[in-house]
Length: 245
Image (cartoon, rainbow, N blue to C red; front, side):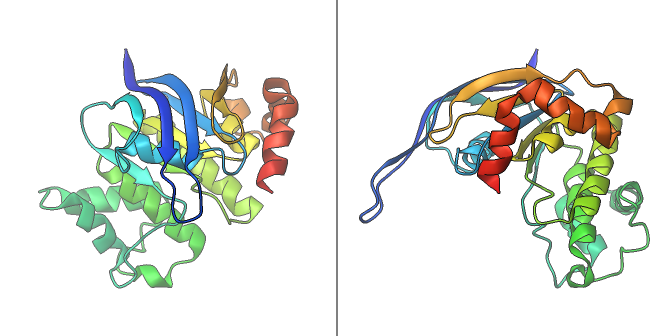
């Protein structure tokens, strides 16, 4: 049974000033099973972030239907979006509200992302890599039934991005959270996803739905991830990365 069902006939943006109407997405249909991670891969401007906004319910204006799983939804944006005037612990406490076990959950969530000692620090004092880890902890601390990630490693140097991907891989395996990941990086999609949805250039249309047959160990081996990209995606993998550069 699908945890997430997406059937988008069309998503249009209305004309603004001299800019004409824009067709952003067309005929994008897919399902995500409970506990599955699916990556949406495509060149810049193909509608990936628009798709994620529709799935999140942030933009309700489209033709089609989206069915989300019951429970909480968590969104990890391209920017960490922490409250800089609050401490790390306060940023996590903010999304928990009056949960009676909030302090224990905050401590456990920060430990999971290797930031156990950062609770008293103000978010403005964190490096970008640390802030992204706090954003992941904030998303998972609500125990979401659906996790959305919009290029969460963009603008990071390659070694830091690799370490954070390993962390996300561990967290997804541990929590078995249903996840939809948007990326323009073929390596990232191959490493993290059970399936890859390949979108065309704008307007975004679903070109392929590709299973990723890598073991847990292979996903943690940079050489095996690199080798899998052309095997799974062929020239599309190179084209996506070049278009996003």
